[in-house]
Length: 97
Image (cartoon, rainbow, N blue to C red; front, side, top):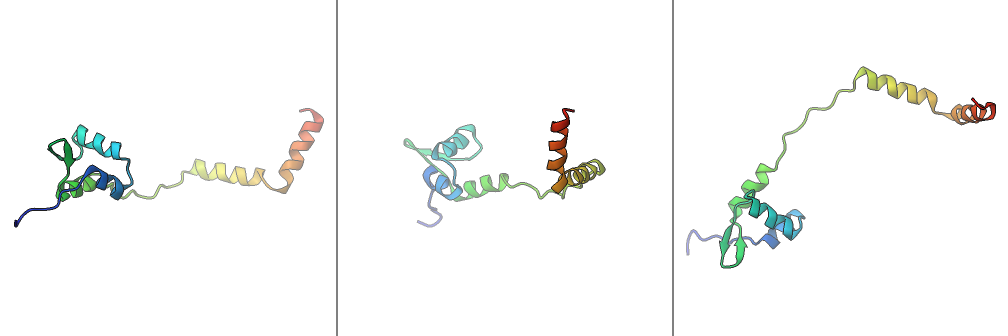
């Protein structure tokens, strides 16, 4: 019949997304993923699956700018590490400070 489409099962959605089957059922029960209940089985229309996937898409984020404080902390860490730092710690332990 024209206009009929293949319906997807929660198991197929789980396989396609890498989610657990129970997680897909939870999305359906919460109303996040639209589905049809036919008898005792859930079926999902492909366009409802695509709309659900699209709703989960996040917007691209701008790169995070390092603050001056972060740059200073990184410089301090770089200066305090290195070949002499272990020797300095050993000297402090020997003097008991």
